Structure formats: structure tokens, C-alpha cells
Length: 78
Length: 270
Image (cartoon, rainbow over all chains, first blue to last red; front, side, top):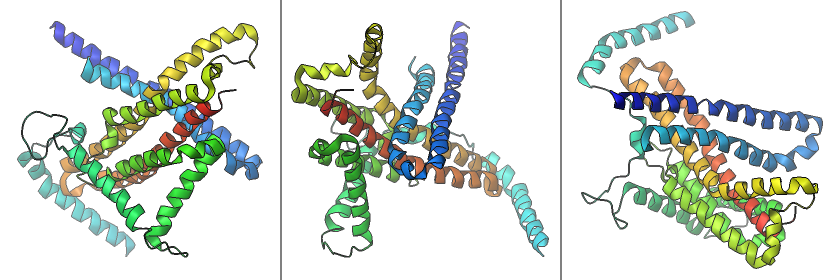
């Protein structure tokens, strides 16, 4: 009985951890949206900043991947 | 005429569902196991995994290596002035990474271009080969990407201390910030520095694992539905197209972050 509760808690926790991905989605959308609004104002300068945009996406995305990792850890490693 | 066609197609789908649906659910107890594709199995021997066991992981790393050798040794052996198909692919990849290193790490970073180029090729081939059906994505394992990221982290840290001496520590002590803020920033910078290898490796492995698992989930739906599975198959095509993009972008992101870290080691001033 007790084991089932632990299992249930793990699965609920894993599901809750996945909500963190929504935050990452907001972050990535924010980065790209701001890049686009800047790029449409000055298209000449946009090409040089694509790499910076991808770095920003990578940093924002890393935190979403952390929540995925937490979910995996809860489900398989604990 | 057009509606007739659609009606006919619908009829065929429904009939096939009617005929095949019960068969598919009865005969094959179909379970969706999207994570099974990441299991490492020995290929030529039974039993335990040792460091010398030839697994499916080793096989696909070998195939990736052979692909790189084919592209870059045999593809550009002729060295034509007007490049052919394969030679121009190799040249495009080379110029792309060369420009990336030059833009981000500067002229001094070009000394480490071979290492970064090797990283990019290994990850690119691992990711793209992983999209083939029945293949194994070796970059989806944190063991692989963790070693790659740790090698980058350790070598960049050593390089920073060798090139700049103790001035490398000014990376953490931001002199352009107001004085009361600097200790706070010091803590944040130190934490973010040591989180680098973790985020660097998990980003790649997590993206690969999640993307391939999504494809397998839709493939599982298609397997359950049998012959009439139009919607899951369309979804697989769409996700596959997205994955083609993600796969290349993740190789690019891994490489570009390596360049950023290298730049931090070469020019630690903010």
C-alpha cells in the first residue's frame, strides 16, 4: 500500500515537472519574437545576429530540458 | 468527381478499419514502448556489457565515422575547382563551421578549429543517422554527450588558465558592474560556469531522446490502428520533418556553445 502511494507521488511529480517546459516555450518564443521584431526594423543587421539568437534559444531551452530531466529522474532513477 | 474520389478513399479506409482493426488488436498485443529504442544491446555476444563489448551503439558510431571519412576523404579527393555534388556538401559544412569559429571566438580561436569541426561532424552524423528507421541514436545517451561536454569544459578551463593565468578568474568578477552587486554576480557566475557541462550535454541528449520518442509514440498509434492509420502517419511525417530541423540545429547549438566557451577562455574580460 505504501509503495503504491510512493509510485503515485512519483508519477504526479513527474507530470508536474513537465509543466516547466511551458516556461521554456515562453522563453524561446520571447527570444525569437524579439529577434524578429528587431530584424524587421533593420533587416540589414539581422543576418549577423542569427548566431546570438540561437545561443539565446539554447540557454532558454536548457531550463526546459532540466524539467524533462527531473521528470525522467523521478520516473526511473529514484 | 473530386468528392467521389474522397468518398472512395474514405470507404476504403473504413473497410480496412473494419477488416483489419479487430485483427490488429487481437493478434498482436500491441504496446507502445517509445523508450525501447534507446536500449543498448550487445550485437555479437550474450550477457554483460563490458567496455570492449561491441554494441549497437558502437556499430552506429562506426557507421557515422565511415560516413565522415567517405564524405571528407573520398568526397573531396579529386579537389576540383568547380566542385561536384559531394565535394560542395563537404565545402559548405567546412566553410560554415570555419565562419562560426571565426565570428565568435575570433582569429585566435581558429587554432582550435579542427577540434570544433570534429565535434560538429560527430554530432551531426550521429543525429542524422539516428533518424533512419531501425537505427540507434548514439547522441541520445547522456554518457556520450556528457563525455563530449566534459572534454570541452575541462579543456576550455585548462586553456583559460594557461592563456591568461589568474586573470582568467576575472570571468567571475565582473568589473563593469557596481561594487555592491559584484559578490552576488560572483556566485551566479560561478554556478552558471559549473552548470555548463550539465546543460551542454543534457540539451543534446534530451532533445534527441524526446524527439525520437515522439516519433515512436505516433508510430505506436499507427501500429494500434492498423491499415487505416492516416492521421498518425501524417503526424509522423510532420514530426519527422521537424526532427530533421531540430537534429541539425542541435548539432549547431552544441558547436556554437563550444565556440562561446572557447571565446570566454581566450578573452575572459567582460
